[in-house]
Image 1 (cartoon, rainbow, N blue to C red):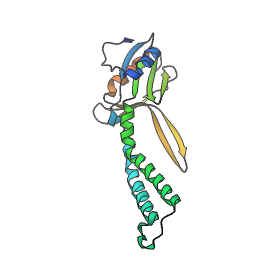
Image 2: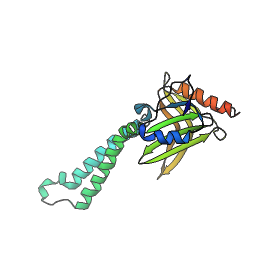
Image 3: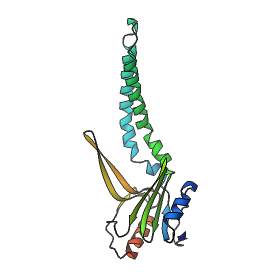
Image 4: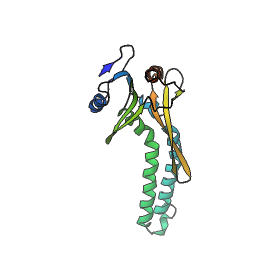
Length: 198
């Protein structure tokens, strides 16, 4: 892999090294990096707070359904109620643990900017590669978290879930130093002859 000497670049995790080498073969790498685990998990903390009352209610309801309110009746709770309650307890625990899962996932994500494209590598069960060519990238949004850490967002996807919606940001999320990544993206777009919209 060819690399620019003026930028500090991270090496990919071993399990992604072959994929990175294959996708960047013949291209000059302008920048590469890994997300900070807790920076990557930042968006999940709000979800985790929602999980506290959800889990507490699920535990309370399951305890009540299992006979917690009428222990002197001598009747056992229907198995269906216990299984139903346990299912919601598991869902609540998953919501509570979602920031920790996201922090773990950050270790399986790698970002690369070459002279022609921005790449996001993600290996969770299977390999996922998202490529944004300079010619097709409409620009990016820089989100500063104070200092030099933050996100560079290429696009947002909206998923409808029941009555609500979930917005997912796609880009270089959880960077310790977004400045070098931003400079590399500007260089990439300049090399392609495209103006930068930020």
